[in-house]
Length: 493
Image (cartoon, rainbow, N blue to C red):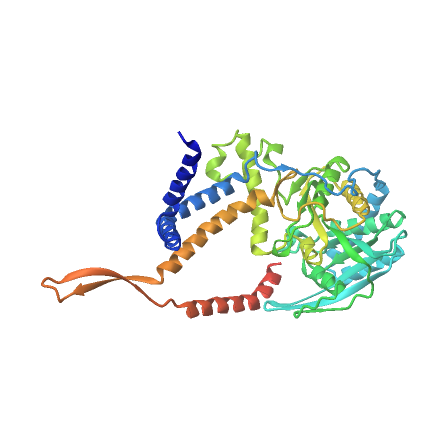
């Protein structure tokens, strides 16, 4: 038996079966049409399958089995490796500042008086200081204020790089009711006095006490970088420093606090380099002894006796003792909070205004509580964090810029959660393409009156698609959005 000649013949028969006989070009066209017909018939099933896979993936994202632990990528940071020198004398200084700020509050002092007081205190420390007046004009009215800022020049470098510490006059908790961030301002003033006593700084330190909540920092940072904003009239800055690499914003509204919450979302979905957050949470837990939370979400497993508000009302009794569901709900709440900020393009705090200038920044929120932490703990945490970022030889770049923090020490890479949205988008794309094809064809019924018996037949005919009308509506909505969005964005901020 000649097996040598059989193999080519079998292979040729398989090729003929797949490609068909006759003209190859005609066979290729037939195969394409057959494939397109099969895809078109299976399109409804394909769309449903993609949607099921995409939404199932989304439901799996908060699962405790999903994600990985955070880690430090930048070797130069070395978080938690220094001996901190912040002590009770610095706490006493912060208490004195607080008493003076409370006196200003009690006599209903204006923002200009607050800024003048801060400016004078910086000058008493021997630091160059100045103020900045600004006016915002929006469709809801005119907003005015005064910022105060100071610069501690580095004794060991040329001042081409800088780090920023800030506190807004209005706290995040008081964005709607006007609660003041007096302890945050006191912390910054006391830190300025403390940092001035050490010559270890390799970068300039910039201290900013911004007026209002977001408007003051927006006026200061845009002026610092020479960016023009049509609805902003801000006084030029008389003091300047180098390129700002990192920033910490302090929000300390209560008498004392139990946790330090981290707000990290910026405008238009921007996020800081994850190494900044990773360094802070390591320092806070190990150096300051302060537990860290995301935003203001306390993990319900820390307080088992409390009612778990992360779960819906109907599920609280059902999953009361289910630790898995408690963790799932906590993770889901954190994810929804982050995605909510990013979807709206809003910042979660003052820090978010700095991201557009390539400044890695976060807000430290001292969660109000009867105790046990105060000026001593937050001062040690900030000192160690600033000394950690002081070690940087270049901008933070080694870690992630696209991530989801699902827990204090757990995160998801972009490749773990983005495919779910891609799969759902693909299903929607197929649906749109199907509607586009359907809109071109119209099934009409025609009668044949010439025959002995009138008969009806269905015929597919083409029709014009109103492309220009749809395109005009789309362009009009984009133009209106471009005009309205900046004003709405500022007011939402």
